[in-house]
Length: 71
Image 1 (cartoon, helix red, strand yellow):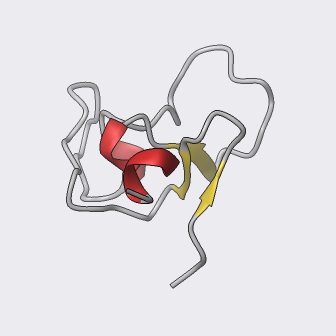
Image 2 (tube, rainbow, N blue to C red; image 1 turned 135 degrees about the vertical axis):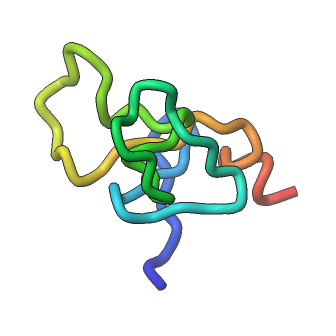
């Protein structure tokens, strides 16, 4: 498994095929596969992304933030 990385805001950086115990399918996913791409906590599908990689995003679940994980 890869080392867990965080962005400047403390949000966990995730790959599209990763998933964790906090996975919840996004209402907009056509085929809700159990991976971050289809999870409501990721922002892979966010409009107006800054041009970053489509293979990586951040997890917006508060339990996966750096300060929550390191408690």
